[in-house]
Amino acid sequence: MAGMATHVITGAGSGIGAAVARRLHERGDDLVLHARDAGRAKELAAAFPGARTLVGDLSEPDRLSWAFSHQTLPDRVDSLLHIAGVVDLGPVGELTPKTWHHQLNVNLIAPAELTRHLLPQLRAAHGHVVFVNSGAGLNAHAEWSAYAASKHGLKALADALREEEHGNGVRVTSVYPGRTASPMQAKIHHQEGKPYDPSRWIDPESVATAILTSLDLPRDAEINDLTVRPGR
Image (cartoon, rainbow, N blue to C red; front, side):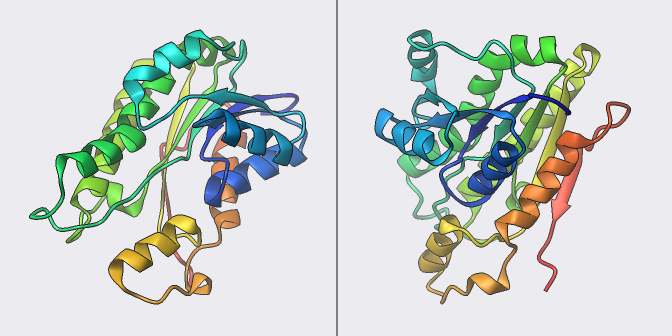
């Protein structure tokens, strides 16, 4: 993706999203950073000079259409990077619909809705949609039902989108990182009641490298699924 490409990124505030945004920003690409509210948008704009922002609450996907109708969507989108995510652990016997809805909304329905709004631009640019999934998108363990369901669903969304848009020249990649050193990982360890040692897990920079590899792959090929596991 040589030259001035435009990337729409969710989750650029921390972890993998911040690492990806920083790398793309450093190489001079244009960024459109999603933020859940105006305050967050201001922080992101300060962190990435020259970046534009797009405001909308991913936990309320029904309202994204309304939010976007009051803003200017980018007229060019070379890549849409779905990196934002939320996690709440608990046994099926204790998870409430509120917890289920929150994870399904942010991790699955909002990415579908954001994709729907930007598909015309992605088709025009022969762009790329990257879904940062999780090992939980391939296997569901005890206490991970709602999160894993949202991520299994995200795999289905990516697979269907890839088949639908292949003829339009849109590439679709799912990335399945293992546990990555990030604020989300600290929260998971807290919920699991375990001490958190970031050095045991994948550096977000390593996942960012994998994501950039899929973006920069020559046009004759497409990485469909990419699993990234801790190497130590």
